[in-house]
Length: 308
Ligand SMILES: [Zn+2]
Ligand SMILES: [Zn+2]
Image (cartoon, rainbow, N blue to C red):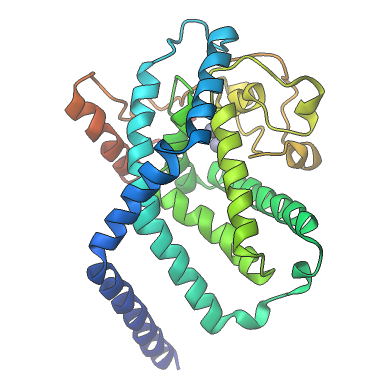
């Protein structure tokens, strides 16, 4: 019986992986042009991108969280490289993976689909979707802190000592895979419309770029409802007393409801991770700036330490 199951699993995996490989082999130019399009047309050439950068840099000048951090800092240069890498990873690996996940769901698990969330008016569907996605984002973020191997992946994001607008692009490719698995399957089950998912994703992405900035604000009473530059800096804090707090992506309500909200709503600590073995960039040479992210991608597989 086990042998039959193993053979069936092998046939299934071979079938899927050969399909995936032929898809990848057939369309390398299409995927690279998609990466270029995402980077240039969807980011660099859009007005919101430059407005968001201008607002973040202005706020960083007027009210910096860390005064000694330069406007065009070492961290900004590092994460600018991650910004380019992320466009490539998203366009080639993540889009392919999500597409495969959706096909597999459609073929083998579509009986799980619930259509009732498609009935309400558009604004209510957006509200339901943003709450659902934000909660799922909280769940996968929590898992990335609590499961040792996932923490090694996620520690790349936390290793930045100079938080900035582009730090939200600094993620291990396997973290994207885990994150999209947690996010996509419930969205397929509840049959959330693709335009609604896109609107939620854009909202979340722009907002998280803002609160990764070196900005000194906790947004006053809004902090009980929204993630803020101060609350997310606590999440990135190198201080042990701040560990594993403030997991929210847009809303802080999940942290208050689930007991992970920090009581420190005022301080702006240094950020980073405690592991001295993390392969930080060692010089300002262009080759080093370009290669450091690749060494950091290998870090979870060679690091014996997962200390925070
Ligand atoms: Zn985190
Ligand atoms: Zn962050």
